[in-house]
Structures are given as C-alpha cells and as structure tokens.
Length: 512
Image 1 (cartoon, rainbow, N blue to C red):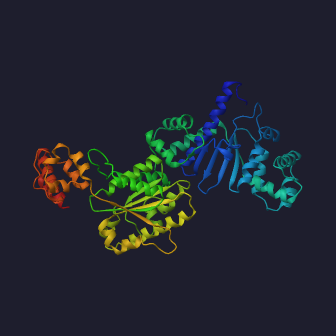
Image 2: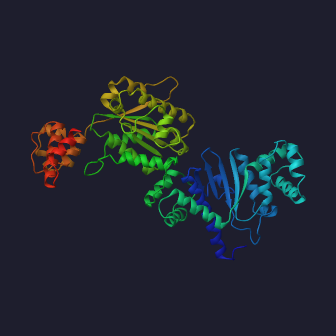
Image 3: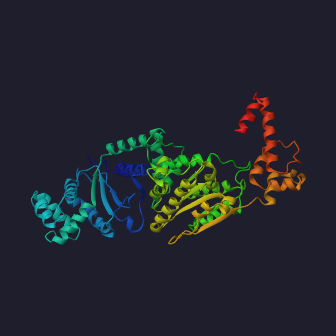
C-alpha cells in the first residue's frame, strides 16, 4: 500500500530509514556489526544510506526504500529508474569485500532468487546460465538479462556470466516490514539493556536525529559513551561473551579503588608525558616509588581515553592474576579469548589502550610468579603481532614500582627488546610533587610545618593522609610515613569509640 501523498509520505519514509539505522546500531552493541556510518562521504556515499562494517572487515552499502510509489513490489524497470544497479556497480567494483543491499518492505522476488542461485551453484558459467537461468520462466530470464545489461555485462559470454555470479553473491535484498523492523528493534533492546525499552528507543532515536553523527564512523566506544551520559544500563547475563560490556565492568572495578586528593586529580607534567607517548603510539612503562602517584597517571590516561572515545581496558594484576595463558586468562575475565584479541575486535580503525597495573605485585601474590609473567610476555607478543597489520596501534601500558623495574630480572626480561621486535618502551618516571603544589594544597598553615614534614607531604599518598587528619592537632613529631599512618589510625580509633565501635576490633582489623 502506498503512503499518503505529501508531507506524511516523507515522514513515514524517514521513519523507516531511521528505524533501519537504529536496528544496525543495535547490532553494533551486540557485536554483530563493528561500525555504522550514516550518509557516508566521498565514494562511500554513492547509493548508500547506511554503510555497515562487520567485525571481519566486510562493508555493506544499504539503501532503504520504504515504498516504490504506488506499487506493491520492485521490478527491473523500478530498479533502473532509481539508478540502483548503476550505483551498486560502482561499489561492487571497488573491493571484493564490499556488498550492497536494498532494504524495503516491498517484494523483489527475482532479485532475491538470483542471489540465492548464485550462492548455490557449481561455479561453472555454463551450468549457471543454461540450467539455473534459461530453464526458468521467460520473465525470470528477462530479469537476469536486463540485470546483466545494467551492469555492463553480456549474458551470452562465459566470462561475463561469471562476473554476474560474483555480483549477485554480493547483492542482497532484505525484505522487512515496518512492523517486523520495529519488533526486531524492541526485542534487541530488551535483550541488550536492562533500562526500560521505551527510554532506550527514545535515546537512540534522539542519537540518530539530533546528534552530529552524519559521515562519522559510529563504533561501540561512541555508543557506550552516549548511553552512559543518558544513564542507560546494559544487561550482561551469565555466559554472555560480548566484549564491550565486560570491558566496562572491569574498568569500573579498576577505577573504584582510586582515591584522589580532596581537590580532585592534581595536574602533573607526567600526565602530559603519558598522553604524548600514546599519541606517538609508544608502549609505556609508568614507574615510580610507592605512593608517588602512578595511579594518578593511569587515572589521567583513562580520562583521556574517555574524552577521545578510545577503547581501553585497565586491570590490576594483583586482583586479576594472569593464569596459564592469554586465552585462558581472558576467558576467566569473561571474554571469548585473549584480552588483546578482544579489544582488537572492537577497535580495528582506532587506537586502543591496555593498562596492566601492579606488575611488581606479581612477586608477592603467589609463590611462583613465572607463569603470570609468561602470560604478560605472551600478551606483549600478541599486541606486536596485531600491530603489524593495524593502521591504528594497540598501546600497552604497564605500571610498576621503580625498585622492581630496576632490580627484578624477570620483570626486566619482559621489556628487553627482542630480535625482529619493533617495541621500544617509553619509561615515564613519576616523582614527588613540586613544593609549590603542596603549598597550594595545604594552604596557610604550610609555613608553620617543619622542613621534614614539608618534604614528607611532597609524596602524594602522604598528602592524602594529611588531608584526613584533624588540623587542630599538632604533627611536629611526624617525620616518616609510618608516623603519619599511626596518627591517622589513632584519630580513627578515637572517633570510632564515639559511634560505639570497639577499639579491639579496629586493632584486629589493622593486623589483618
């Protein structure tokens, strides 16, 4: 049935195309599609409403047609009038991994049947033409010959018949009604999200209509960032091996342990050094003494990744100890395989960041750390291997205490340049705060402190403790980090008694 004439027809046609876009975007969430581009630019734009890229690198140029004037189907003349064949030929001739598709509620049986026959043939031109075409109805033969003519092929020549078979294998006709399309969208939303279906749909509708997305590659990182801002939550079921939601969970686990100073994350030059190394696609080692702010650097990197919408994963190795090999460890983390292969899948056309923190802790978290370090070595090799083929590199960042980096032979072996390896590690050393930074944070009482205490507070972890101490007390006898910790604990004990907690319990907890 045709649309009503006038403005309503335009609105209904647009609604169908918008729903087609939302449907393909949902497949990006589900990791069936790698990315979607709406109204691509350049040659990609020709005959294309939606450009879909799959995880194996195939590209599909989709045209969405809600109606064919007053007709209830598509025939060869309609396809010619709409210049569909001529635009398809341009895209199909560009690369073998490109496909084209017409998405419409209307039937186009002959085109669908030609695709099916081309996919189910002996691949001999004579068999395809003489048996699968010429033994069909006159109308079907006419459709095929007209198709060949529109694609610049001669149906009686074997070489052109073979070419037509190649084209037809990569031409898809997707018949889907408005009702079925909406139902598929609703079902996918219910599967992928725990937020209310209507809220998610309206958010995606707003994303397509209101956001500046035209001509831009829409990937998981962009979509996840948008959903977080819209306070949309994802549904992750047992056995669900989708990569992006699992990465999001692991990153939340990593970041929940970070405790900034009361004024928030304090800018440091080391942050700029880290970002500069990332921009140059260098592998990084963040090194420094305990409490000097290595975690602050990783926090700055994560903020940068979120701002630039770069896929990233951050893991504390003392909490998620590498085990057996990369594949098994990745599966234990909830991925289909290695974390390297997983993040590669969702970041083929953009940089990705892997942060492995607490490398030095592997010495103390198990009797024999050689297996865990061997997994780290395998991970480094996997990144190097994939980076040979990637235009945008995966960047590996290890965080390790300076003492262990300089004195542990097993850790040193991880970063020793191997033959045929292109990896050159950028070591970023995190030092203590500058005096001016501490002075500004402490405030007016800074000048009243002893020289030893001033120096002690240049260590970020000590400054954190200082901010939580009662300022009415005096701390002239605090000369070491242990003194500060003891003062803080004494304060906690005093306050705990006022709320009914027993000091014995606190002492027992501290000893644990």
